[in-house]
Length: 199
Image 1: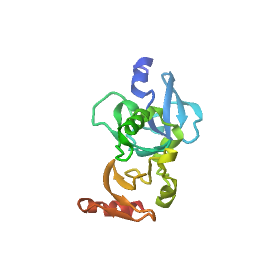
Image 2 (image 1 turned 90 degrees about the vertical axis):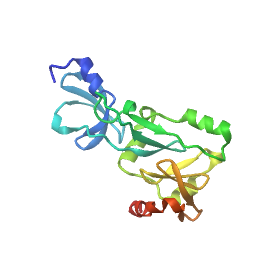
Image 3 (image 1 turned 90 degrees about the horizontal axis):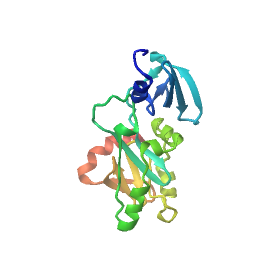
Image 4 (image 1 turned 30 degrees about the horizontal axis):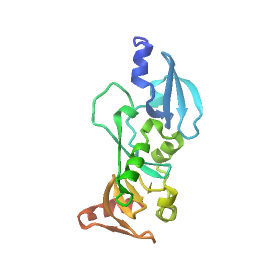
């Protein structure tokens, strides 16, 4: 790594989401050629560690849905080539969900308040990576437009809106009743297996 400048290393690694000793972290800074400052997503704690390649894993992390402040944000990795390692804000896109019952003004405000990956709390991203989601019964109790809880995910690929719509990767594929039972639209019945795996 010594043949790379500090600026090169920052371009490669700074603000990247990766795993260090199998734990999800953000590389928050490059101290010097072999010294990285990292932040653990689980508790937000910072540490300065020596860069040892075998301890870092830059395989892109699939995130999917992140529950944050009353909204389930769906993130996908952009199919682009870039120098940056791991997962980061520049190679990840949030797909926005429209809510039919909100009206245009409300939908616009929700979209304006939508977070980029870099703006979400580390703890919530950690929960998504570790697949720590609420259950469907918990979600049905929590969803409330008046309390500005518009959608909640129960899986990296599935979420429920306050309109009782079932989302799969931000596409409405069915409905969810108050008792938690799911009805898929006929053309999406192939997702039954994916839902079964979720449960």
